[in-house]
View 1: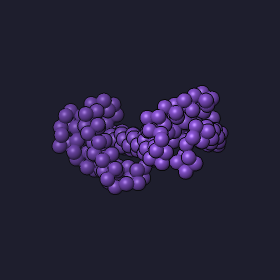
View 2 (view 1 turned 180 degrees about the horizontal axis):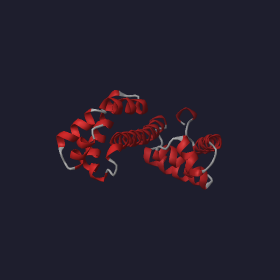
View 3 (view 1 turned 120 degrees about the vertical axis):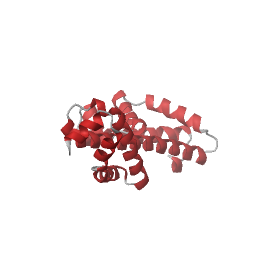
View 4 (view 1 turned 30 degrees about the vertical axis):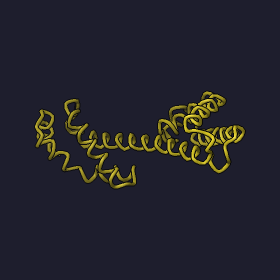
Length: 177
């Protein structure tokens, strides 16, 4: 990477910034696609990253690290999109339960889930929250709670089974949960 180009980009030169990003756009897209497995979402992540990088380039301390810095922004954008997708999946899941259980509204189901989560141990509740509400991967959760990955998987699986059992006791049908 041409350090003079990065220096100009850091000084606010839009053309220099464009050239710098253009030189690594293919690598950025491939990395985004490896995370998101979707062409449009990958392009969106790279575009969002370009915008963030343009406004944040003044914070770049080591000019020679531009490539790494930009790729890190792309990865963070991908993780953000995955978290957003996880939250949408949870919302869709709740809507599906409400559709299959006509006597329960989506709001009532959400409230029931909040109450059911309170029946879990705090650490299990936190791991469920991190996985399904925030969108952390199991590896990330494992590092955060400082437990082996296998323990995290077991605890989340056990907690979900407990929630399913409690939901059935509340009257939700087996097919919907």
